Image (cartoon, rainbow, N blue to C red):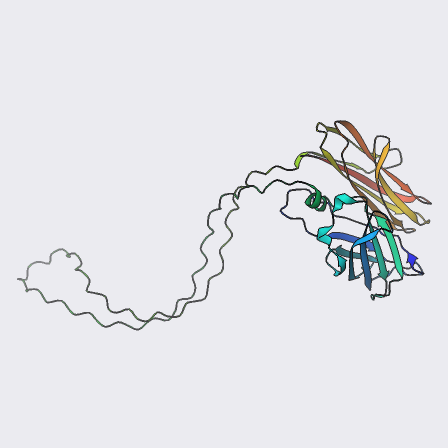
Length: 340
């Protein structure tokens, strides 16, 4: 029977306009063996599946990877860069969720997967969602070219070519009477040049000069536009003294991109630890991870909300399965409003 494992997920959320989003997601997991001991500084084999619809739904993407844990048992991978088993990461329509991530792990670094776990993807990396479901505008025109960089150093001089034959001497003029020395006359016309010698080999290319200044950015095409950004950090974070942000939305189609982070030190009782994002009295997102006894931990939750027109209050709240916290280092909540 495969043993379950609590997995801490961290996804990178990127805002901005891109011609194409990188087809990968960052993934982290703390690996423990069957005796609940950390697997440190060791190769770990893993099969990753993206399931659609439910924890037992059909797999739209499957790959295998081999990574190495650090001294804390933390394994870091990039989903989408492993050995493909089935499906296509680039063809996943993130708008047709929910999606779940299933991991099957071999702590010995092979393919005998003895540990498995399935977790819902509570938020999709924003750039991947926009690539398959948004309507980005055309790329703006290219800005003007910056000025040329300085010339590189000249290459070494090639060897001197053969000397050409001497031109014919001009006829001597008639000698005049010797008088006082006059002013120096103008230089006479040069005789015809001799035949050029063969060209020497080309010298080495000098180093490339510094890059010229970047031209001005062209106008942004139609698409999602930044409206506002707020970050609230609370170092006295408790169940009642929370990280709170109030935003005003004036467009019904605007979206609020939320990122919440909670840092803590667990007491002697190990349990799951969750970071919840609430809008008013409604919980809209939750990210959970396993909090080992007497260790520091961090839980991150990300969510894209479309609340409609109005003034909205968001706050970050913590919860855990059992025991409590020795120390709460603090929490932060960020809200970025974008509009089409």
